[in-house]
Image 1 (cartoon, rainbow, N blue to C red):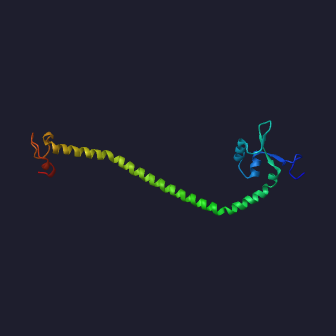
Image 2 (image 1 turned 135 degrees about the horizontal axis):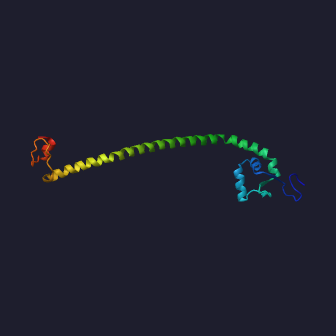
Image 3 (image 1 turned 135 degrees about the vertical axis):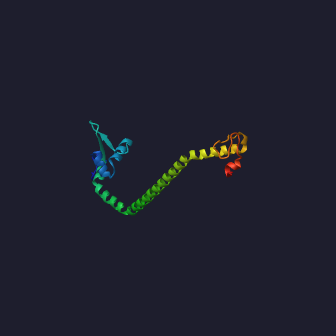
Length: 163
């Protein structure tokens, strides 16, 4: 019989907890749980309902070899990670600039909305002046206007230019 094989010639399996399996496989506990849900990893439940992961003896024995290989890959991916971090920082700066521009646009819109009543009031005044110009007979005289007699109305050009 070969090393790591049972009597039937199948690889021998070690029963480990979910936490231990995550450590041996270099992943998270949540990833192991998802694999159990999808039934993509060998597992069994005991009478108490606790899940045990069945790992090949070869996997547990070579876990340290995989860790050193993983570290070598991390060393090689260092420049990629630093480039990704640089891009992420650039995107953060761009997002902050967009947020500031959006806040400025909101301030401008709020200022314009506040001015709408004043604009509408000035339009009403100018519309009233047009009515007086177009129909001077309907305009009411202002008794407090200088030179205005009761029942007498001054022409619009005198009211504007004086006289």
